[in-house]
Image (tube, rainbow, N blue to C red; front, side):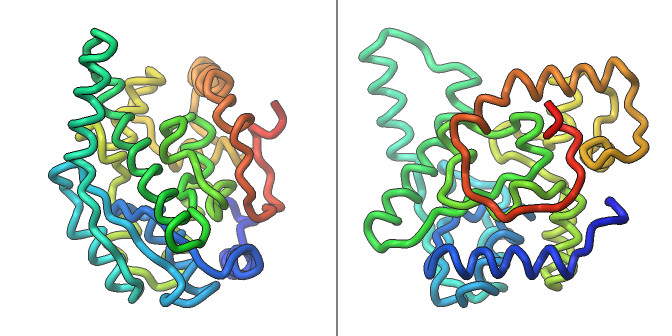
Length: 259
């Protein structure tokens, strides 16, 4: 984590931003650290009574209990909406209407889009803003579903690296085992870092290594590995360019803002 990162200052900056942005928030709770930290910041900003958590398993969700624990720790209201029946109907309609077969890409990304539809439907029913929970490392690599979890009305963690998100979670005294759990996207069955090692062809890819590159600090990537990361960034940059989600200003060096 950058030595210039002031966790107290940045945490208070996000809270004040969220307090001035909306009086009510709705957030998808996955059981991971990003949704937990983003939700905790919203609770600090507007109070637990003005934050609704939506837990949206697609049939079975391995970390369902972590999502429930997150909501109960923060004392927010939450609803469990199982998207499996809608997902099955949706996929069958597409199969039959187009004569195409679902594949790995559709089966792992369509649920993320349906979850976003559920959250947006709730904003239309009860008001409030949808919180995007992506962090800077995910956005740099395009590790999110276009039209799915990369959507939102506001993105409190958008410009913060995974190390910084963890630091904010620790500062807020959130459950250690949830803040420090291995990151998983909930779709592929393996960790983000294992998936990204394969995608980038970088052995032992770890988010803390990327955090150093983002903040312009000494890192251990080879020139070819940096090129691979840059290619991935440029290939997925349209996700950020098309959907420009409001977020707090962050006065920290960012290697990728130069491109």
